[in-house]
Length: 224
Image (cartoon, rainbow, N blue to C red; front, side, top):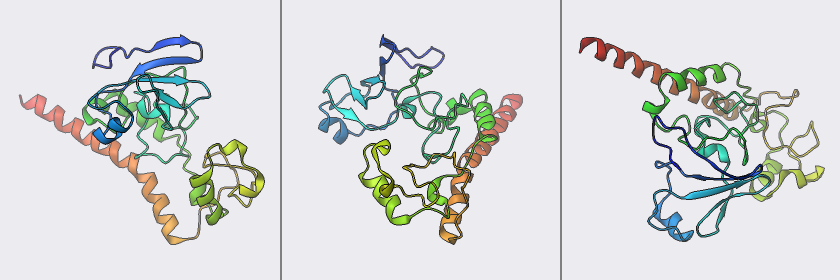
């Protein structure tokens, strides 16, 4: 399996609902993390993705709560998009971050390597940007701050929450930030509104930076 540039990323399918892939070479695994997982000194590791299960390392038999999208060539960095912003995939899929996907292609997410993100990937991201719904629950006027904290810190499976643990005063049902609620209303709190605007600008700014670099590269090529 490989994720080298100009080569198609490979996935070994074990069944229609289970596959194995190699982590991208630039993933930020620290030595402490790898030592704790029994994978000390390995720059690349094999990861198992199975429908309905946490991702897990093939060696060491350790699981991790990370979403599959964080390892996908079609993913957009969680540092550029919040968890509830959709679409968050270069394919335009309105699914947020998931732990299993049949369109998965191992690679570096958009936002991790500027050279890799230039041109075609940047144009895909621009198309996604025009369709993004930014209405994340944490910026909503109807949220219950105390229960938001409880949901994010204590809940292992949001679907198992009962209504008393839901953090939305309008929906009255478990919810964890998906941008699908028609009742969304931007908070009147200045700090929350500022964070909302900052979140919206991250991907926009990154795309602008890529376009600027592409123009400089074109000028440099012409001069040569």
